[in-house]
Picture 1 (spheres, one colour):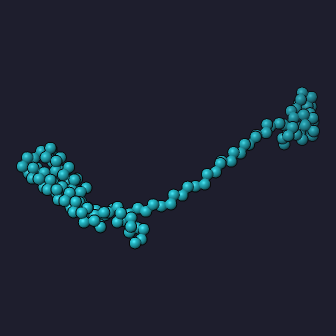
Picture 2: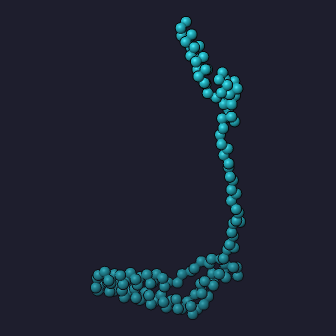
Picture 3: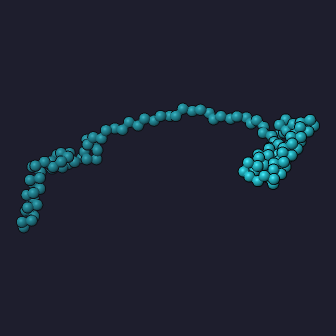
Length: 134
């Protein structure tokens, strides 16, 4: 027998054992008779209680009837390999003007600085004034 067939026989004893099959059949008959009696009770005494009794009896029939349980073979359990997260620390360098694109201004500008000083602003004003006065 294949492993699937062996498992199917193991979890469905009524399929191979006559005593178990007879017990299950007897349980189904008893549940069916109780359902029929509770249905007759509904006809005789209609009401919520008799309807609930019938409902319960019907559920008993549903669960007492023999049914085939499909086999479930044990599968090999596979686990993922554990790994440690790699922590990357990014150290942000503090910005400094001497290391920026503005550094050439300190050397090339009239003020020889990053900002125009009073001397350079006066010179700019006098040039602009001459242009507007002409």
